[in-house]
Amino acid sequence: MDRFVAQPDRHAQFLVIDEDGSPAGLAEISLHADPAPGALGAPVAFLEAIYVVPHARRHGLARALVTHACAWARAQGCCEFASDALLGNADGLALHRALGFEDATRIVRLRQRTAG
Image (cartoon, rainbow, N blue to C red):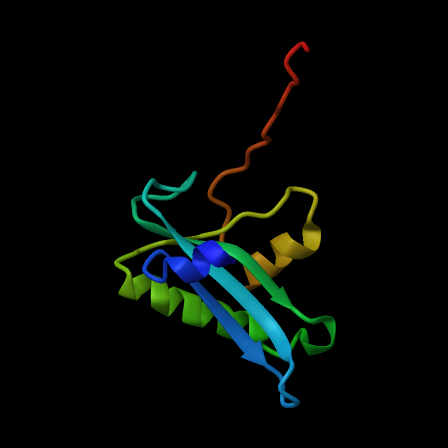
């Protein structure tokens, strides 16, 4: 979060406040100089995180957050907005698709520990 606040030209945060003054949702966006996997060009705005508290879901808050994030991305010169979700995260994938994101690539990142 400190990195986001320290570089407002490269990172943005959008917060939705409930009627009672409590945070109800958050989106964090950053600019990537290199194209994201599957993206057509750079810079690309990247949705780093999105969260809406459970009781406020299904009321359009995630859509509003992404709408504001897209406007910010356009103002930064981006023509694309990217995100990611784990393959097994069915809810996350469904949310992204409902918000207008489409599959660009599907990858599995692999790792191996080096011998100690």
